[in-house]
Each structure stands twice: as C-alpha cells, then as structure tokens.
Image 1 (cartoon, rainbow, N blue to C red):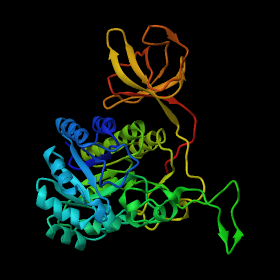
Image 2 (image 1 turned 60 degrees about the horizontal axis):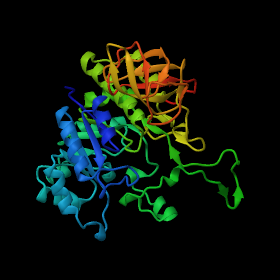
Image 3 (image 1 turned 90 degrees about the vertical axis):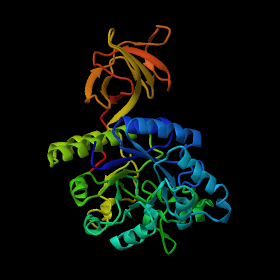
Image 4 (image 1 turned 135 degrees about the vertical axis):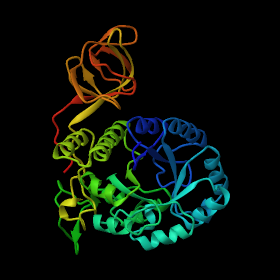
Length: 407
C-alpha cells in the first residue's frame, strides 16, 4: 500500500465507490448537516454507514466534513450526529469549529479529528497547538508555498494534509462573506454561491471599463500541483487532497487515476519523468472544464493564475458510457449511456486496471435487441461488441478535438 494517502471527494455514494475503485486511499464526504457544501448531494447516516463498509472492505478510510462555523441555532443535534458517525465506523472528521473539536473528543473519542484548512494553518507552531489539544491531523492553508510546507514539515508534530488538485477560493482559506452579502446565503454555514465566479460589469469611479464580450470575474484558476508532488512527498506530507465534491463521476475517476499513477510511480522509482507528467497533462485535459495553475506553491499567484474573464476550458474528450458488465465469451459490453454517441464514433476505454485503449464503436443494440442508430438518452442501457476485455466500472469516452486546459 502507498505510504502517503490520496484523499478524494465523494459527493454521493456512487462517487465514493468510484473514487476508491480508481485509486483513492481515502474519501471525504459531507452529511446533510454541519457541512460546507450544501449543494452537494451529501449523505444520510445510512449512506455513510454503507460507504464506510465499502471503503473498509477495500482498505480505504472515510473522513466526514463537519466543517461549518455553527451559530447557536446550528448546534441542535450535533452531539447525536457525532456519536452516529463514530457508531458507523467513520475514521475521521474534518472540523473548523473549536467547539466541535472539543465536543468530538468528549462524546466520540474514537473519531480522529482533522483541523480544516479554514483555520489557515501556515506554520508548525499552530500545528503544535493543535497537537496539545488532542487533534490528529492538520490540513494546511492553501496559501502556503512549497517552501512554507517544507519548513513546516521539519517541525510538525502531527500528520499534515495538503491540497493537490481542484478549485481554489479567491478568499483566504475559504473564509468569505460575498455570498452573505449578495445572495443572503452564509458561505461559512454551507451556503457558498461562488459569487466570485459570476461575470461583472466593471466601473472606475462610475466610468465603465469593461467590454460586453469580456466581463470581469474574480475567480482563480483551479489548482494543479502535480509537478510539486515529489518534493511534497519527500517533505513528509501524509495526505494529498483533491477538491471537488460536486464534480462528476467521470472527472473524479480521471483525476484520481492520474494522481494515483504519479504517486505510485514516484514511490516505486523515486523519480517522475517528463513523460510521466506529459501523460497526466493529456489525461487531465480529457476531464477538466477549468484552466489550472500552481496555486500558491510557486509563490504569490501572478496575473496569469487568475481567470478575469473566461472561466472555462474545453475538455478534449467526452464521457459517453459507463460499463455495467462485459461478457468475455461474446465480447458484448453492457453500457449505461451518459452522453450522445453513435456507431463508428472513435472512442477510448479506461478503467482501474485498464490502460487507455482506443476503439471504434460497433453496432448498438437496446435491451430488446433492436439496433439503435444514436445513443442519446442518458442512463439508457445499450449493448455493443468491444474486442477490448472490459470490466464492470470501466468508462468510455469519445475522442474530441477541444483544446487542452492544464498548464
């Protein structure tokens, strides 16, 4: 097993299972209450229990975000919730409130308590403090540079987790009140509306300085820290976190699989080559829908690390089908449709144990055995002959020609 943890987001039970199947050592998820991602599907206790059972059966851990900053009226049910998380076998909770930290240690002592990135932990001194309070891990602030992380790791008394990929908050460590002011939704209680990513008309002392076809946005590029991975591993970082509980299953599988490959290659060989990075750059471009950059690891972000106008970047491939089953005797694949495709489309299959393999879509059949010209209905079940030895949970994407989106 890998010496370091690859920690992936799980917006629902299906994505939890995909993340683990595609290489995550651990997943983090939110419950229906006390989490900062109210727009994610989120989990009932019964779902968390099922997720824990699945994760533990596959040698993985489950972390639950209890990271809202609660007001007085939010505290009802908190103690019972923490006890429920402990009862169903959750491994750790990610916490931003000192009260929740203290309460968890009192009423659910078997839960590890990880200090959220919202605490803006940027040095070993604050980690020492959390160690003295009985915490088990600290998630460093995303505003730390690579040198900051290295220096902190030389003195840290607790395991340290850092973000390696995904969305970045334009505010410091996610502590923002834009949504409060603009949508009456409290970002620190689960209501972030991502107001920073909206398009704005910009004025200077009442004079418009915008163009209609190029409105202003305050969004930063998504984080892609793959090139810092070797130095972070060597520094002793315990866990590498992928952001994105609201991302699609396909995005999740692609990103987790890419970082799994990098981590495994580095741990096995002690080096990552230009070819290793090039493979991941190409792979991520098949799923990314936002431009990416190094975040703060390379120092303070530069002008080119922000998205002042264009927020998106076209993916180079499109997820078209999820493999439900495969008959080795007939080479017939049972597929669940996700996006439009048709016979003779050029496609690529990949999976947890399947290298990227190109093929041409053969004749499509519905469940009654009737030929289908175009797969156009999401979640429809279709059959087609594929000479590649597929497995359940593999994915198929259509080859496209949009531009790559990672640096």
